[in-house]
Length: 118
Image (cartoon, rainbow, N blue to C red; front, side, top):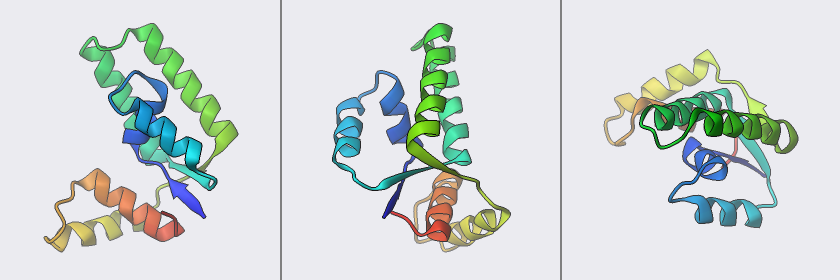
């Protein structure tokens, strides 16, 4: 089975975060292949950039996090590209009105549905 990683888990793997221990524990216990989408990669860059702008991280720490993330992805994950059909699927989820979703979360759900992973 494959497991899709959301940006909240990814950020906690590469910078000091309140979810560090939880993310480490989850990944340590997984035996499944790990999936990261280009959407998650973009959200990771955004989250790290925001921490630099709010002075929670120095630029040098951000560059280190980017390098470590890129190396980790190359060695331990499969990159999945978001497709235009994922946007349509996300829009359909958002139009249901019974899910309290924001667009990025709906896009992640659409991607995981398309590729068939948890």
